[in-house]
Image 1 (cartoon, rainbow, N blue to C red):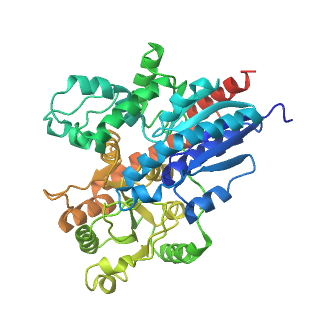
Image 2: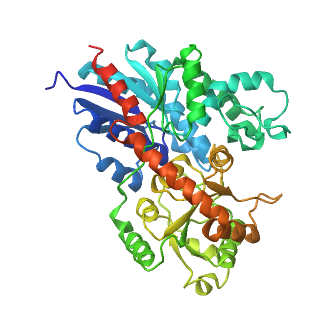
Image 3: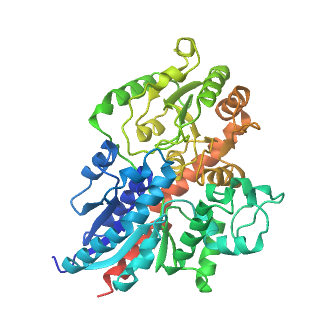
Length: 473
């Protein structure tokens, strides 16, 4: 039996949402073939947080993990932007990852190493190790298309992207405004933009790119990428998603949140509640919390709001444990006035169970790719409220392309005002536009289910890849 077993090494990014996505991919792999064993290398800064521990401890026996922890990192990254911490942790972890991969090769039949799309440095390092190297791309095919096209775009554009009057045309994608491109594109002179271009160039070193999407979701983009692949312009592109968490792996201490949420939802009418959450990493300013709260109240619609306090960088780096009471940032009297209308849950809520509840009729979402796919998997229409990274691009895809979301408009200060909040909520929950969006999202849910069923497009693609690995020796 041991001789049949082949090992795949995964390299996660040091961000909880990325780890969760790549582990769902690992679970799908071992369900497809019992001869596979997966080892996940997890870069961390110090000790893992409770969420990460719980997620890893819930894994089946054929998936193990190794922490990769650079020394003396804390002093270099104190009080810095979380994105800088992630980049620093990745840079310092890459040599350690190389060492761990060599150890795996020495004691097992390692066929392939698959690294997260933001750790493309691994693709360079493993070229001397005689194993296949892939990128697991946890976001959209549209973002991947931008990455693969970014050098061409850089060479043919003279101004800042955000100043362009005409939308940018990425091959195979809907036109997108320059202001909706990912954060590194905001300033072409910045180090983060240069790092984005450098990382995108490394994708061409991969033996293949595995994308967390499915054909019916991004058909035109996938077709274009596969046509480029046939012409030898890009690596092999494999659409193998969606990967969506189906069970909660959170810590026991959150059981009260789970019970409170679900008991409250049980008392509500079908499709009547708006779920509000900005994901594991997103926060909004105090001023925006006030406007959102008053907009929710003004809408008159039922809501369940997962609330976190504002943070210095409008983003919570999700390795920490937080104790500040976020309720103190709400408008005076809000909780009393809305006690029959909604419920506020601090920090964490069982999102999968919430989205799967019959009472949920809409999702005010930050447009992180994991959350978007969870919304699709449950057929829940969205209000798009992007915050950072590639989320504005995701919002454009789902609002302008797929037309299964309504985008909240910001004022000149970047704030979504209470009147706009109330209007988009009512449009989604009780308006004619919302009814049309709901129907389209139901159809998309069916397509997502078909993709991962036996014989579905994503299952076929992944099965063929596994067979290729097993036939190497």
